[in-house]
Amino acid sequence: MRASRQSILQQRSRGQAKLREPGVTLAEARADLNHIADGLRAKYSDEYPSAKGYDIQMQPVHEQLARDIRPVLIVLLSAVALLLILACANVTGIMVSRVLARTR
Image (cartoon, rainbow, N blue to C red; front, top):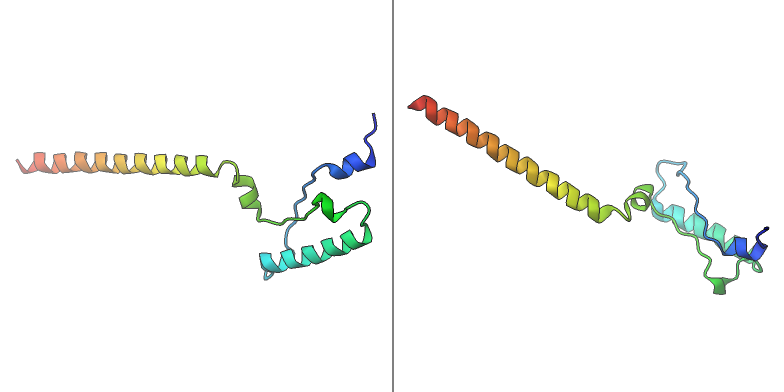
């Protein structure tokens, strides 16, 4: 079964790229990408009508990867921090009790 061209165009596609120049900000890259997208929309207006909502978005990779699990990571980090505080308090209590035992 072959998919029609229209159904292929309606699918959502993603791509990844790396900024080539180190001094380029995300806002500058977005502006360049929007300029390219406007040119493509003008050239291929039949395939990409503006009423269909075709859009190009750019965001850092770490935001894309951690988007869905960010709340879970925050809870996990909080639990680890609490466990570390409890362990430090426990070690401090042990050390204080040893010092008190030596002074007697």
